[in-house]
Image (cartoon, rainbow, N blue to C red):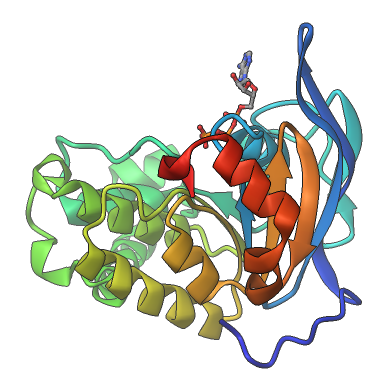
Length: 266
Ligand SMILES: Nc1ncnc2c1ncn2[C@@H]1O[C@H](COP(=O)(O)OP(=O)(O)OP(=O)(O)O)[C@@H](O)[C@H]1O
């Protein structure tokens, strides 16, 4: 949690206004509005099917909004392609792991960093001095990022051989390679054991120190309540609460929403 962040929403990096998403007759999100201030860690929580991933998909450009808009750094994101949004600094991870299992851990990072590369096809094929220098820089940066997420000792192994929790860490490293200012993490702690989840909490704090704002979707409530400056609660596509963790934990509507869906989601 970033202690320097005040409760005011005066300087939002992300604003979601009156968002609605319909799939045919199914209303996945209806009239949802919330914002994320620079430097905050905000969690978007809610029972299964509440609309969290749908919200992420719209914010990151993978799904069009039926209504409403997403403003990132003062710019409307509607109509932009996911890679254009990522290039602007809004980068996400996915709920299902998306690492290249047959490539090494290091190569997964190198692939991520190459998306930022600037060489022409000829330069790359001929391995010009500039490209060679860039390769070395990418390699250094990849190793630093692996160190940062705690996977440096696994760099030469195939990504597919990593434990599931470690693959989630690799995904975070790949997302960081894109140099985000706003990082959307979709259930990053899924599949992590308690020790890994604890380490991930520390990693989130370190990410915050790098001036990266974090919007998190996560079912691990211990993590959510421990790392978040603010928690936004979705239920049946509507925001039913938005506030600091201590307040959210006491909110009768939130308690009811989770109890209504059974204890496994709480
Ligand atoms: N592509 C789609 N087509 C039709 N319905 C969809 C689609 N994607 C999501 N939905 C529906 O929209 C609603 C919200 O789903 P969503 O995946 O956003 O929920 P969620 O809060 O992320 O759930 P979970 O915690 O289980 O991941 C659900 O009723 C879901 O079945």
